[in-house]
Image (cartoon, rainbow, N blue to C red; front, side, top):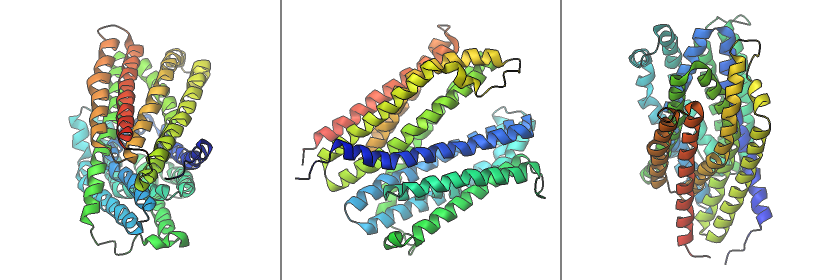
Length: 453
């Protein structure tokens, strides 16, 4: 019988993995924030183009990132079984699929201008976004490969390097933006195209740093990650594909939920949309903490699953959920206690609409307190299910919760019932609650079916 690990040990090991991954997620968000802030200094139309281009890039990226996220539980499970060859094969096939996806979707970025015009975007914004996306498209494959290597290293417990490389990427992004957006230090002034080049530079540098670390660090050389990289492993490729496609589609469904909410909020009014964006940005910051904890839960559950240790698997899941619950409750308390000061951090109160945005955003942030428990639980449930390699049914449960329940509820509460933006957000809460309950039920049903060791 496998010895039972204490609750305190589970908590320490989960936090040792989860905190650096949460920090890395926050730093990844900072890359986007620095682009928006610095383009805001440059001009309104270029800012709109970069926001449009970056959100379009992200939608395509989320779909492809499923392969990278599939690598994490596969590597953790193979390592727990002592199969170092499989660790290499799974990661290599994740890189293969990421490169193939990046090449396959490049025509979308090449034809971005006509696509954006067909979607009703203003010609002056679409013209700038077209140049931005053409350059950014070259970075899709590197960005996805970075995510694969992050998953690989995280599964091996090397989360610190993932954090430090991401933090260094933020600094590099600021420097290259400063040089190329504004034409400082003798560089040409490229505006929005400069932001795209900065992003591409960051992706290439991050890939080089993580690749060198993974390939040359003495303690990791035994995996021979890049040895005979050209050799296919079709069973591993099929497994990464089978797990990765549903993960990507799940992420696309969730991302689309919030994109749709922004569209509907725009129907209500500009002030409401601005307040919605700020409140959602605040909620996203706390959500990143749950994302890091969810990845840690994926790794730990996959390790115990690889060993066939169901008792410690269940205990690891319980501890991860308790930590996530504590983070959610702290966020709820913060949002309820200080809604106005938090929203005010994002506003210049001397501008005419700021007072109205502050008032409306504060109300939405109070509603966002309800997000915390549901959103934290659903992303944790997805992480736990990935740890036991269950992704297809969760994809269906999530899509139904978000699109057949959440979006219709948002529309009905906001418009026919006249609750406006508050009703729209309450509908999102309904969708997230349905996702969290159904996904959590799915996980515990599956792990209860296996006997204790």
